Length: 278
Image (cartoon, rainbow, N blue to C red; front, side, top):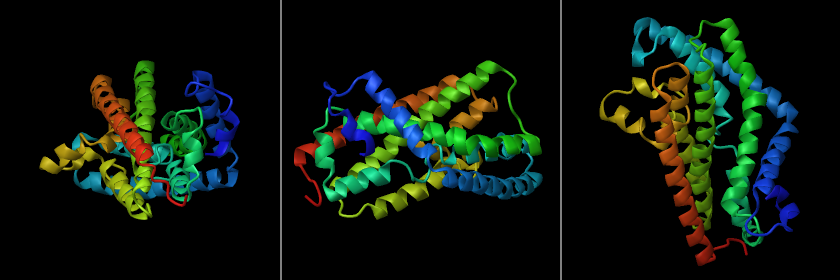
């Protein structure tokens, strides 16, 4: 679990100060991958350009598709590129390491540490998300804002509400991936589950197309799934397409439900003592 060994002297499941230190540790850990960060900024910018011109061609044919104008569609693209790695939409965060620790049996050591397993990984992933937002997300977003016409608010309160939705999106994203990682207690190989996560994350988060453009029952369903809390909700708050409270409600409900589910699965896994490889 990386820095877990340094927390052994703390009691009672960990303190707020401990978890804040884990957040900072997660941030510093990803800050050391400078070459990967630069490559990620370049990749997100290139994919952003491809998507922008694809969207503009689509919106030229359907000017009000999904209730968005062209400037809103462009804004949506660059916001998606800013949040792609931040929210680990298709995986790529802590879950790979946690699944490996479960597979090898090292998780047995982690379960006896005084820090709570779920809260530890949440704190670590929040640190990762924070760095990815600042280190990999801001530059492509600013590039898009400077090069293309966009639809951004001038009200500071809207920006504040948007940042809160991003923070809640981080928690929802963690909760989804934590459940995926815990499946390794019962599966010999988590590859299949990770592939499902990648597909669902790409489609149901709105990373390919805004969820607003999907018609009928399918559109209604995907707009209330937890992945809708990752990109679609924050985007609509930022562009004034919806009030912040409904998005907070959706994100908060999924965060509570998924974290609770993760807690139940974690308890079942530890009672069963299924530690693969040991």
